[in-house]
Structure formats: C-alpha cells, structure tokens
Image 1 (spheres, rainbow, N blue to C red):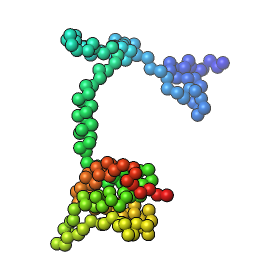
Image 2: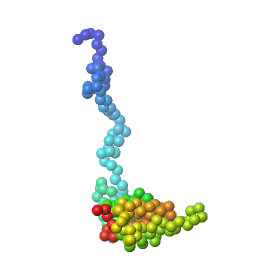
Image 3: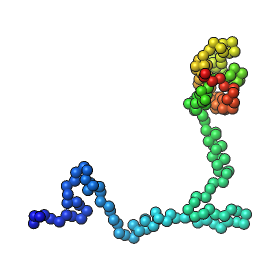
Image 4: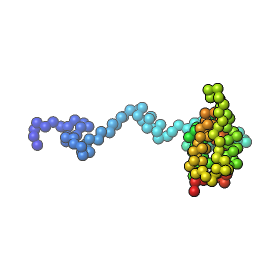
Length: 181
C-alpha cells in the first residue's frame, strides 16, 4: 500500500465506478432529526378520524383502519348522474355490434326508424335512411344491413336523438337482433 493514498471520504467508494458495479447505486441518506421521526411515525400510524358516538338507533362506528362506507343514496345518486351523461357515437356503435349483431330484425328496425326525425338541410327536408325492408331482406348481406344501421345511428347523432336511439337499442332483447352467421 502506498503512503500517498488518502482515506476515502464518507459515502464515496474507493473503487472506480463501472456499469456493473454495485457501487453505482446511491448511498442511503440517514436523517437524524425530530421531524424525520415525526414523518416516520405518521407513515407508521396513519391518523384516524374522530368518530362521534353513535345514537341508539345508529350502527356502530367502523373498525379502526377502515374507511366508513357511503350510504346507498350516494351510490344511487352517482349512478343517476352517470346515466344522464350523453352517450357517444362509438358507445352506440359498440352496443349495436355486441354479440356479433348486424342489425335489428325488420319490425324493431322499423320502430327505430320511426324515432329518427327528418332534417332540413339547405332548405330541403331530408328523411333518415330507411331500414332494409322485408322484400330485400334475403338479398341483402349482413354487412350491408350493419352499414345501413350505422347510417341510421350517425343520422341520430346529427339529429340530436342519439340518446333515444341508444336507449331503444339497449332495450332490445337479443332475439330481436339479426346476427352474422
């Protein structure tokens, strides 16, 4: 050992750093103060909220360490707010395509068509795209039927009745849908 070597500084390795060396990891920082101890205690023992004593007809307070549950009214109110949220075109298309659906059967499809209002564009009244009628049902492929349904759903979106179309399609039982073979 040479006499000119200095002792290593605290926290510094005397060995040179190289990529595979464990010495490249940062050294732990130890803090010795009252605030460090308070932070440790806060992490170790989370503060419990004070729970008032229950009335005779109330339920007992939750066990320490558990969050109190929300009353059912809160959950129902949150669901009602969520249900009032406007649906998107993608959500309605996903509903229409679920379970390999192509389109509604002729009778329910005609009822959907009745929900779609005519629109006035450039001073001319335009009717919504009609469903595939019973005469052309066998000659029309399932993909063409699905594309026609898509046209109607897009029409409902532009006419401002997308929510009504969604609600109608969501209430249709599975046996009232035509599916891809």
